[in-house]
Amino acid sequence: MQRFIVSSMKTHHGSTPGISLVEVVVAMGIATVLMGISMTIINTVMRTERETSKATWLGSSFYRFSRLIRSDIHAADSLDFLDGDARNSPELTIKKAGNEVVKYHVKGSRIFRFVIRKDQQVHQDTFYLPEGSQAYFFQRKRSNQAGISIDQARQFNIPVQKEVNKNEASTRELSIISIIGHDHRLASIRKKQPEEETK
Image (tube, rainbow, N blue to C red; front, side):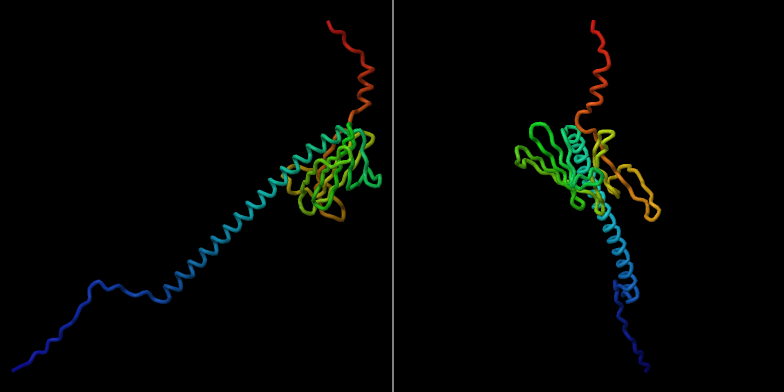
């Protein structure tokens, strides 16, 4: 009599294959590279946004300053410079009619404006320049003009004049100039001209 031994085999349905360690390492490496690229892009965008915001803020401050100093110089009865230096002065005092005095003072990358009436300060403004800029006030007596010159004004996003030195790299210079008060020479010319008769 023959005996047949039948071995029963158990089959497992629906079992998933495992993930190897190499696949895990590759996936983590790809994720790390993508995260690094994303962080670099985010930092670049944020830095560009900060620089753009700073340039816009500086431009707005400078635009307001340029309008005020032109108006003050044009309304001046007389100008006084620190130590009498009318070519390279960090301070400018403008005397107007009605006992009003406006003082401009350059300190580092900031320009201060003080309005004084009857020996009392009634208003103060602060304007900012790009870091590393140098500003000074000047007067041109022949043309009856005065203003301020700013060196290395690179962050205003406006066209400026370039000066090239032999021993230094090219620097950018920006000047704001206005006629001082009432030009008596123009008034005398107008008086000499005959007036037209009105019909």
